[in-house]
Length: 314
Image (cartoon, rainbow, N blue to C red):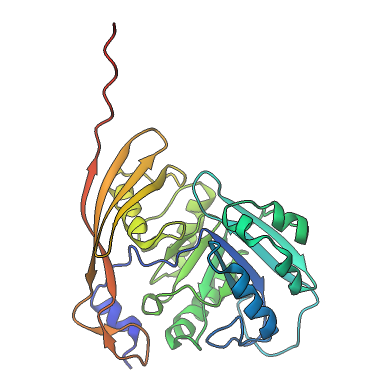
């Protein structure tokens, strides 16, 4: 049986520059079944779901539901729910956690401040604190959006949990169904496609050590898609794996061509030319959809800029 994932893998569709964009992630535990639009089609109150969507709009915050791996029979609402917030911009990366018995508390958050990287609103409203456990490994398993997410994502999430990965969660939507199993790792916000359990464990070990595994990486969610592709290209060219070393500081141009400026904390700067192409031959972007030509981010050139000359002595 052919799937969107099979077609993408067989055609060797590139992963770089395909991650969801969000500087801040807000995650709420919601057990039980999820619909295609989980915030309004799960056992979460749909009125609350719509209110959270509205509150997060244009703030840089992306809201998603999470649940522990395993069977998802309907056992009613939990007395306490886990909540996480993570900011992914280099220089201000953090992951905070809390529990709540009343998810409507999330509406009291200052979403604008949260999107700008201020965790104080999360801590004040939810009595949150810095997360001290394992990094989070979020695997998309929402089969109502695409069957590949369920067929491939759920076994991966279950295998991670069974092998002792305490930060393993299922998540409602990460985009890019055809790259399933898809994975988001927090706090740093790098997304991965076609993930396998042994590779995920290496990725998580990298997070613990403050480094980025670039193999299978779709990009960092802190950046727009041209920036994601550019940053990964500089990491490869410079052999730089330190997670906080690089930042996308400027993006000039518009589709189908951008010039992206990537800066290193040591002062080096690169100019990266990224072109938007189309993936050919046509393939389904998700199972059941018509054949299409998904946009792809192609890195055309990577150039390290010469540092400014020092002034001559008088």
